[in-house]
Amino acid sequence: MTKKDLQKIFDSFSKVRVLIIGDAMVDAYIWGNVNRMSPEAPVPIVTVQKKEIRLGGAANVALNVQAMGASPILCSVIGDDMYGREFVKLMEKQKLSTQAIFKAQNRATTVKTRVIGNNHHLLRVDEEQEAEVTKQETQLMIEKISFLIKSGAVDVVVFEDYDKGVITPDLILKVVVEASKKKIPVAVDPKKKNFHFYKNITLFKPNLKELKEGIKAEFNIAEKEILSKVADELRTRQGMENILITLSEKGMFIATKKVKHIVPAHVRNVADVSGAGDTVIGVASLGLALKLDPILMVELANIAGGLVCEKVGVVPIDKELLLQESITLLTK
Image (cartoon, rainbow, N blue to C red):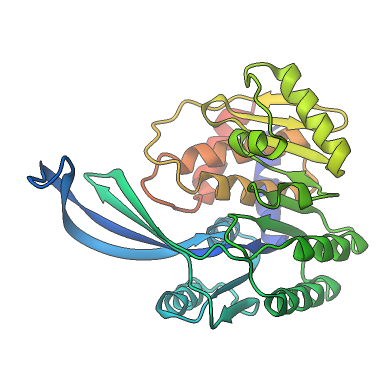
């Protein structure tokens, strides 16, 4: 791999159109200083300096895709409430398409509020509704997604599943069928609830915890042979083409028909792991659309995930920083 090769790949990202389906949310932040402990309980007192809200969940995948120069379309259901309105404003400010964002009258927009004191993540407060969206809302999403796929506006589909109810088994089945008709690759960042409903997927990206919960098993992550066996069983049972298992500080494991390989993590000053999975699936999906070599795809996603962990809060990847880091680490 040469610098010129990497530059060409990064330039090609601008041609990719990504349809992201999943649980969108608002990330709210309370930033402040901690100088003393509370006299009422053994907890720190945070003197608030500023508050802000950002796009989160599946919308953060869209931000990462956009940051890489590609064109994302986010499909999700949010609440017809104050935070839902703020969410749409944030999308518009970021110049992200809202054509596939549906508002539900009887649904609350998911909000994750993080309290940051002295640049350390102290607490998270979640306001959410985990019930599945209605059949009518699912049908609206299916119709919109089918239109986008049939019209040739999609190069890769990403399911970003946070178990908040937007992704249903029926939605998964219908979308995978439509994508397969057009030979469009499908990437999945799964959670526990729908784990076994994802079938005939091009790239399946659980982390180790999600994998263990999904297959209801315990195993030693240090043993490549065990990871290989688990991945092969999953590929056979659910028709997966590529399995990408993120292993936190151990790196990532990629399994295909021909390849079983662990990509080690690079040494980082980790400040906050929030949102790293969104970055990984975002970058990996671009590699999938461009038909990159699986190991190269994972190496780029691995570097990207590590870089965002050096930032406090959920932030998208910096394309130029990723390119320079990739040149440093991957070129000869």
